[in-house]
Amino acid sequence: MRTALILLFLLALAAMPGALLPQRSLNPPRTADYIAAHGWWGTLLDRLEFFDVYSSVWFSAIYLMLFISLVGCLLPRTVDYARSMRAQPVLTPRNLARMPHHAQATLPEEPAAVIADAKARLSGWRTVERDEDGGGKTLSAEKGYLRELGNLVFHFAMLGLIVALALGKMFNYEGQVIVLADGSEFCNSGTAGYDTFRPGLRVDGTDLTPFCVRVDDLDVSYFPDGQAEQFTVRMDYQAGADLDAGTWRPYDLRVNEPLRVVGDRVYLLGHGYAPTFTVTFPNGESRTQTIQWRTVDPQTLLSQGATKFDPPGTTDAEQRRKSQIAITGLFAPTAQYDGTLLTSGHPDLQDPAVAVDVLRGDLGIDSGRGQSIFEVDQSLVDQGRLVRVARQNLEVGGQLRLDDGTTVRFDGVERWAYLQVSHDPTQVWVLVFAVAMILGLGTSLTIKRRRLWVRATPDDAGRTVVSVGGLARTDQAGYGEEFSRIAAALRTPRREP
Image 1 (cartoon, helix red, strand yellow):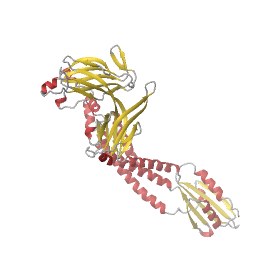
Image 2 (image 1 turned 120 degrees about the horizontal axis):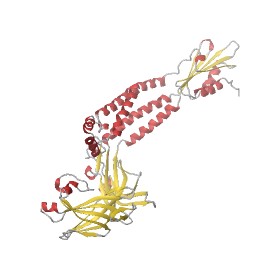
Image 3 (image 1 turned 135 degrees about the vertical axis):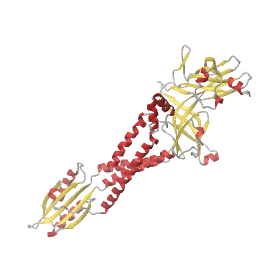
Image 4 (image 1 turned 120 degrees about the vertical axis):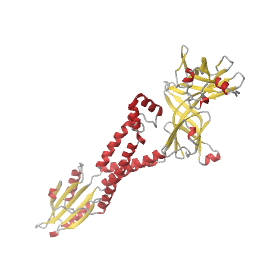
C-alpha cells in the first residue's frame, strides 16, 4: 500500500507538465512555437518528452508500476478476506473488562437462556456459541465484513478503470468536421473526410465505424441581446443495413444531445457561416463556390475567410497560375458600418454583407504544399505573385467588376455545423468501474467492522453474571452508542409472555 501511494503521488507529479506545457498531440503548431521561443531549454524538454507527456516512456513506466503495485496489493488482501469470511468469530477474551467497551449485569435466567436471548437480539451478526468450564457459556459476534469488501471493490474498480482507460487510448478516435447545412453529407469512411483527426495508438484510420450523416438545416434562436438560446441541426443519418438500403433516419442534433450510432457519438460543437460567391470570367464561364469562413468574433459571428477559384478553360499551366482568383475579407451576418469599415451588430442573419479583397495571381495550389482554406499564403503576396486588384463592400446580390472584365457576385450565405465524431469502445466499462468505485468507497466509509462478546457465568446464588465486551476494528466514532444500546438490551431480563 505504501508503494501504491508513492506511485500515485509520482503519477500526479508526472502529469503536471501535461497540464502546464503545450502537448504535441493537442496543438502541434503551438508546441513548435514554444520550443522555438525557448531555445535550448525547449529542445531539452522536447528530448525528455515533456511535450508528449502521456505517451512518454517515464509516464508509461509509472503507470505500469502502479498497475503492478495494485495487483500485488489486492491479491493477498483478497485471499485474506476470503479466509476471514470462512473463519468463525474469535474466542471470547478472558477478561472482558479490559475491552474498550464493557458492561456487566446479573440476571435471574440460566446461562443457556441468556446466550439464546443474546443470539436472538444479535440478528444479522455472525455468531458462534461456546461452552466454558463451570457451566458458563459465551457468545462471540462480529459484524461489518462488507467494509473490507467495499474496500476491495473500490481498488479492483480502480484497477479496472486504469485498464479501461488504457484500452480506450489504444482503440478510440476523435475527429472534427465542418458540414454545410444545405443537404451536404459526411461519411465516416476514412480520415480524409475530417478536418482534424486524432486516432488512438492502435487506430490507423482504415477501419472506422461506417455511417453517414446529412445536414439539412441549422436552426438557431437568439435572445434579444444576441446571446444564443438554442442550436438545432436538422439532420438525417444512416448506418448498418440502412447504408445498403439507402434509408435515412431523421434526428435533431443539439448541444449536449449527441447522436449515438453504431458505437460512435456525433456532437454539435459550433456553427458559422459560409458565403456564396459566383465568379464570371471574361470568356463567359462562371464558377460558384460556398466555402466556410472562420468565426473571429463569437459574440456577433463576424467571420473571416478566403474563397479560391481556378480559371476555366486554361490549359497553359503558367497562364492558369497567373489568373487564379481569391476572395478574402470579412462577412457580417448583421452589417454595421463605421465609415467604410464593416462590422457585425448581431449574430443572426438580419442584414448580411461582406467586405472583400479580390486577389489575382498564383495561389500556390499547384505547389504540392498544404495550405489553410481560411486564408491565402501571405508569402505569395509579399513576393508579388498574388496581387490585390479590387476592394469593395457587397450586400447580397451585389457585384464588382475587375479590370479584365471578370465579375464577382455575392449570392448569399449558408450556415455550417461543426461536428465531432467520438469513438470509445470502453466508455461503458469506464462508467461501470467509476460507479463501482463510488459504491465501494461509500461502503468502506459507512460500514464499521466491530466485535462483541457475551459471557454468561452462573454464581453461587443461582443467578447468572452477564459480561458484555465490545471492540471496534477501526477508530470510527459511533460504535460506543451502538454498544451501549445492545448492552442495555442484553442486561434487561426477559419478560415471560
